[in-house]
Each structure stands twice: as C-alpha cells, then as structure tokens.
Length: 114
Length: 115
Picture 1 (cartoon, rainbow over the protein chains, first blue to last red):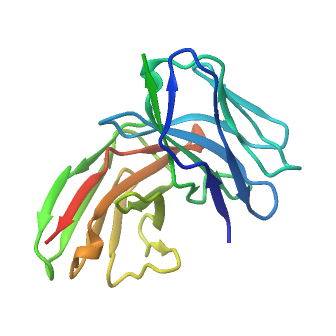
Picture 2 (cartoon, rainbow over the protein chains, first blue to last red; picture 1 turned 180 degrees about the horizontal axis):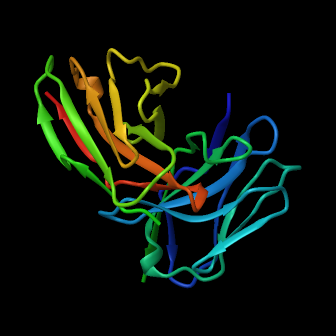
Picture 3 (cartoon, helix red, strand yellow; picture 1 turned 90 degrees about the vertical axis):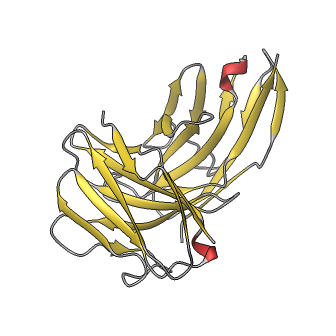
C-alpha cells in the first residue's frame, strides 16, 4: 500500500538557518503530495501542495517540489523563524485527490531557537 | 475554507465504556473523514464518513468498534466502543469542500484517555 517516510526529529535549528525536511513516498501512479503543519496547541493546517510531477508548492516562505524520479517531496525554507516551530507532516492522496483520505508520514518536530 | 469543531475536546473514560465524538463543519462539504493519532505516532485514516450510507473503513478498523454516522452534509459522529487503554489517542475529523477537493480541513481533535 501507499506509504510516506519523513525524517524524524526533533530537528533543532537556530533562527535564520536553512531548513530541509526530507520526505519520500511509495505509491502507485501519480499521487497528490502535501505538507501539513501543526503549531503548538492548534489543529492541522495545509501548508502547501503539489498535484503533479515537477509542480512546486509554496507558502509562507516554504517550498517543496514534486520529484517523480526520486519519489520525493522535500520541504525547504531559506531562513527559519522562531514562529516556524511546529510539527510538520508530509502526506499523500491517491491520484485525483478529494475522494480519498490521506496517508501521513510520522511527522517532524521542528524547534527554532532564537 | 471550512471551520471544523469537535466535541468533546478531551475526555477520560473507563475501559469497557463507549464515547461518541461529534464533528460539525460550518459550511457545505463533500467528503468527511476520521483519523486516529496514537501517542507519538502519525495520523491513520479510520474511515470515510458517507452521507446517508455506511462508512467506508480502512483495513484494521471495523464498524462494530468504530461506528460512524453522517446524517447530513455538515455533521458526523464517531463512536469508540468497548474502549481499552489501547484506544487512547487523538481522534480527528477532516473534510473537503466543493471549492477545493484536494485540501482537507482538520478539526482540533478529541484527546481520549482510557483508564
């Protein structure tokens, strides 16, 4: 079945550092790919998405590119802030999206120190 | 977008009892889902809540243990039956909207502890 593997944390960085959180997936066809974020005390929010190969999703300075050849969707940010401290989940849905639930990675706890 | 509320936000229950969790969305939605997040683990899809018909369960989850209702487009319930300590988890409801079929909006979750 489908699966998502992401680097496990916690990942601790200093403010203004460069961030990469790795995510790879196993799925048939061309799934849709997502990054969700859970800030302390809040619910899950969609951070960005990509629905086809070579698409780049971006939001709030975060980016991720759908790489079919490496089955990856790594999350990057050029300069992190303390407010980026949260848990980040990589997820996928079956091709076409919408009608199916999501398959999540285990989540990466990101801690940004001032 | 859609705003999802869940009740209760948390509960502590004794083994052998049942708890029903409610999920309410503030706007029309298409799909509704229920997930479980066990301590230190990722989210696992329990089932898709279908309006007016039986829910569609994922492998490892059965209707007798997790009965689900969806009487209308914006409301669903999940019951955790005959609870054991292994059911201690966060249970989350999510939904998609007609305007954005790819994005799932999540509720704040219900934190269940079974003693």
